[in-house]
Length: 434
View 1 (cartoon, rainbow, N blue to C red):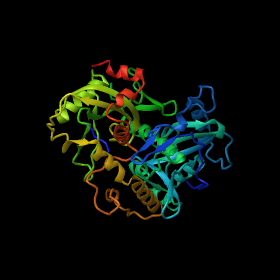
View 2 (view 1 turned 60 degrees about the vertical axis):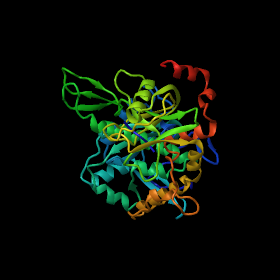
View 3 (view 1 turned 90 degrees about the vertical axis):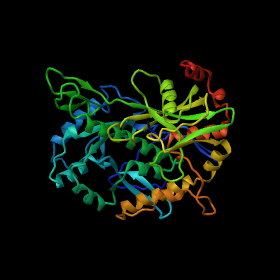
View 4 (view 1 turned 120 degrees about the vertical axis):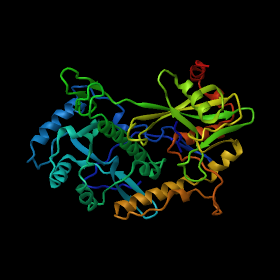
């Protein structure tokens, strides 16, 4: 079971700007509709280079080995240029720029030579196996890598002197301006990198024979070292269904609360897929187990990568559904949820209207800016969801960074017959398991 809440032109000598793909944003009075969800739309993954391409994982890895062997080379390398994003215990390196009231965060891309020198100062030699391929931008002659430096705590002070800091990905998620093309793209890159590095951390040994594994094809997959086994191990995505359960007759939506939620926050129900069941079956089972509500019609909405889940399951994807209730009496499983209630469309609409998502985003951005300047204390985000009068809002729902927000706001703005407005093929596929 799982429930979710789902620029300035700063230039640093250590940071390379990335030309980013186009996104479209639609703002209404009660919601923010993103055509690309947070963590999706990674510009480095838009095209897979052919094996013979100098920007492919295999070709780039061979060039990487050559350059690292030439450790005394101090001159700028010829293209492709390599940029590295360090991670410390799941936190990407970041920097901040802008004014005190509207700072913008940036990923802390470091040149290959700088990365090698930083690690050398810590008494560590940079190895090719420690770098994981993220993708390339052929038009920029650049290839991007990630590295886990969790064992090198001395790097924190070195990078801190350059106004860099390691920031929790969830904090960057909230701090991201969802209308800002660069920030949304960098968030998706950071999410992809974190998922890959966490997967490498939990797949150090073969699940079949227990022997050690080694990265292959620039870290895109791993292989068991046991000559009698030699299993190939690839990152696997853990699908999670997240559903807005709708009472069509009474024009209400079912929202739940977990004990770990901040006060007054409600969200969609969600849960993991079990072996041998379809996505639609998982929606029905999870809803029944958590709330005692029986679901009939299930309609697919959208999906969202979710790399900010537990480190034991780093590669999650949230699969969003609308689900129509066949029964209405709630019986909450207290081991799963703190509470679950039906909420009218009008109440949910009010929650969307007065939850100050922009204020929360700006507060988180200021927090990141303070961290990069060496100030650890930041304002609590839980206090940012207040009505304009200063009174606490009766309820609020997750922000635009989560697919839960878009499931809820789509229902609020499109009506109780939302499924009728989806493409025919999408609706028919959703009904196939009834």
